[in-house]
Length: 421
Image 1 (tube, rainbow, N blue to C red):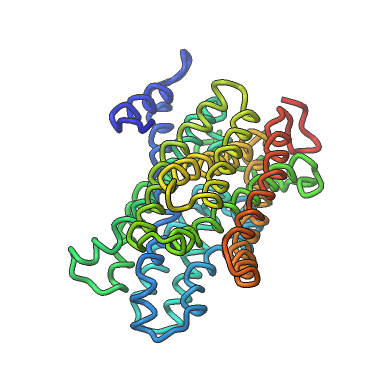
Image 2 (image 1 turned 30 degrees about the vertical axis):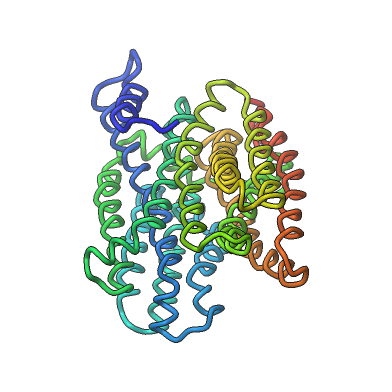
């Protein structure tokens, strides 16, 4: 299901080519914007995910407890949730393009800050990175809705796929990268800042988009959005985003432990986690593309839920003997659900400013739920003494996720003043 890079580039160029009344400069600008979105998306996971493979080194070098080291992975999720409501305000106040550039600069600054050998700078740099990613998480769906309204499936697919690629690269090559470069763990983490520098360079040209039309659009976008937090469709989108986030982060946090306690080696368990992320790249691109082209996003939401449920059930019944099959099912199911959650944000908004506000609401609740999910599941594991009950809890939570997915898939806007699409 993976896509040849040359074919992907050709599809992107063709899909972004000007309409009959368009002009080549417009098509070039839109292609440049699409590339910018993809490069920014590549930067929204590596600086955080790269910490996981080297947590042992960090703990050994700093003398921190396991709980303290865990802050390096939970702190960004808290930033994603707590700072999400601020992102639309920043976008309205300064414009989406300058705000997204500032977010990328924050990721660069936070990555550099973690080079300084102290506890404060390590945690502070991680928080700065989390803040930059939180803003970009919220605003990029708004950019997709505003500038690619007729190609939502393709661009959302490429955006979701880029997120998955960034996470997979960070999980898989951080340790080998440090060995090849002969660097300590701080410098190895900082090397991912080079990708963020590329993101700044790629996005900087967007600041020149200040034609009269752009100024007029920016004025319209500066108007605040009211009523989304009370709209039932917005809560369906938020519920789907939150529940799939909880499922993904809880599974990711404990999958290696589940497999090792079933008798498999730690190395094999780590490979299974990497395989799930690798398979997710294809699912992240395919799900929104198929949902828009086929016009049946609700069906795909159910399919993603069924695949995830099958993988979790397999981990309960035969975690060791069927590990490959369960990981394939989880990889496709959870990644498809995530990309559909992003697609619902774009589809259920009538314009870019509503998309940014809906994205803020969904990601605020979703990532706060994701932050407490692993902790709650770990507590259940401690009380019950095994992984059967925690996995059954995740299975039960898939029922409301499926219901929310069907509701979010219905063709209507999460905006009181907007007509039915």
